[in-house]
Length: 163
Figure 1 (spheres, one colour):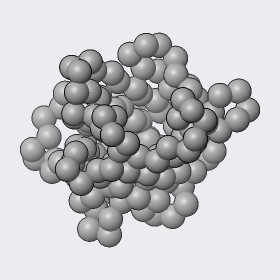
Figure 2 (tube, rainbow, N blue to C red):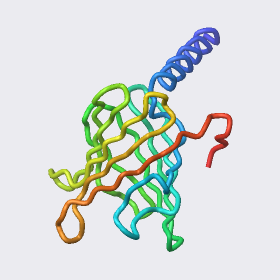
Figure 3 (cartoon, helix red, strand yellow):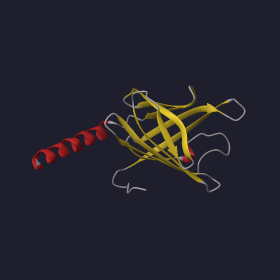
Figure 4 (tube, rainbow, N blue to C red):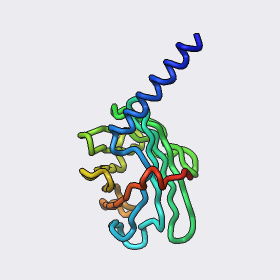
């Protein structure tokens, strides 16, 4: 019995390690404010995204600090199957999201309100796996389309020590 449990644990560990090695989105990403493009006075002062592999998707968490000193977080666990999941944040439930993998280095996250998509984030990881560009399109308060381009740099796993 103990041998079976040890074998099952080892297999689970190997599967999650293999998923992390093959999914370029996993890891810790830090916003490079200087390379990012946001409308005036909207760029975060600091943003960190951490993604961990799950069996068929990711566990996502972002921590953001704004110029005024306020900070927020959001988190969810989602598969790349297009099924909607709840996003929780510092202010409770946020817009649900669904993920769709376009190719090995591209994922589209669509945020919904009711049955309508209200924001779309296209995440693309560079060929070398060190830069992730997140292009988010949504509607501003005036109803016009707003696009933000966040450029994130991957933190090496040896430099990463958690939150």
